[in-house]
Length: 276
Length: 110
Image (cartoon, rainbow over the protein chains, first blue to last red):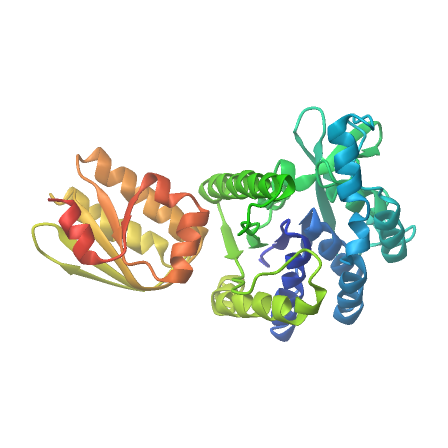
């Protein structure tokens, strides 16, 4: 019987473009996934791949998405929020999401989960309870927006009366979704957030703490699912020797190459596993 | 996958190749038979392990439990960088004693 193969693309901002390298390696071997799962930055890649976008279009989407105007106003809004000059509540963010929404709208328009050629699931987090919310129907623009609502930066996003934030808050590499959907083989491409080298501002220190929290959530959830799953999880953990910032789209060829390299190491075993 | 056992004060079990869904049951059997054959302390030399999947991680975990239940310990030595990354990611450094070299693993038993 044919094994059900899922690809899970974890959170990691621009680093998630490494999934294009993974797909390149799989395509060369004529290996096609039966399901895609995405979280946060990974939701953009899972969704566009599930819609059948070609790699060049996804590359272009990445360049457009990760321009630094997407976080315009962050510093002045942070100052205003900290001084109490502007009010902040659960629906606030330090950045206006207008540009993010425009870009998501350009990518997905009115497409829904029903338009994907490969079944797709996107993970977000319930703002109030912290529980994982798996989105499997509705507009892709809403799912990607909710899954990418970086805490404090972008405002949470409401879907069906549920206030949602970044999927990475509960599960940065949601292999559980693929396990629950009955996958036999799960390729999980995940990314640890880089550590700050210079702690010279409030933002730098909070970003560093955020990386510590996120990386610990990533490791503990991954450890648990590894021990619990009955079949096989193949981790793809690309190494990035170069320092890559959130808007370094000029590093895209390197990011994709590292993803491809990490995937190639797992291809012989994956092939054996799928043949058996 | 190949398994070689070197007898000593603490036996060293050197594994080479791939520990995955296709090979892990053989590794668990060898390790557990060895543990129950009066050798609850083991060092598993990972120096030549090239690949390890989630089935491999579960196999290691099963033998760690087996060794400790038998009154000994399972210690891991010299994982290569790629394997080390997977061990760290899966939280194994928190529950298993892992050493950069076989010599250090041997010394840890005193």
